[in-house]
Amino acid sequence: MSEPTYRPHDADGPGAPDVSGPTEPDEIKADIEATREQLAATVDELSHRLDVPTRAKEGAAQAKDTAVETYRENPPVVIGVGIALVAGIVALVVWRRKR
Image (tube, rainbow, N blue to C red; front, side, top):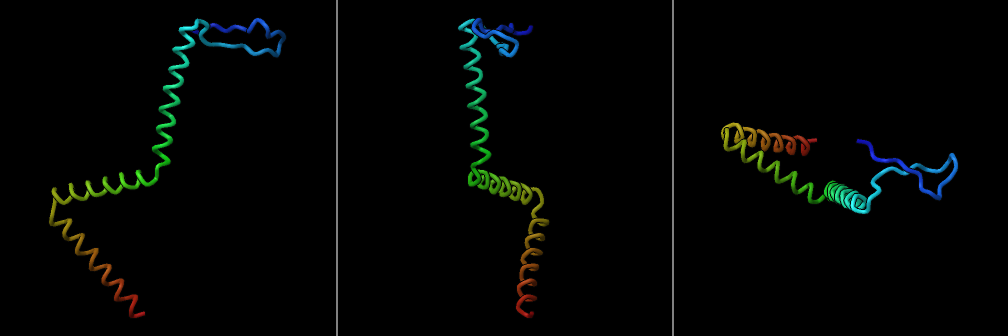
């Protein structure tokens, strides 16, 4: 069902805008409320996206949860990777000091 299109009675001529949308006061109020809710949701989403410190904390918490879950599933692999990382860092430090 298409919404009625009408031209305001004081807008004459070929360049006058056509206005579409609800014409009853209750419909207009409901439309305004729906628009406000959409705008509020958009502002909340933008605020969340722009809150870098909170997003960084969420990312760190998610990485920690992933690491813990991986350790619970297969501890020897995680321990081996940890030892390999430490050995790699030690080797890098020794190599850089010799240069």
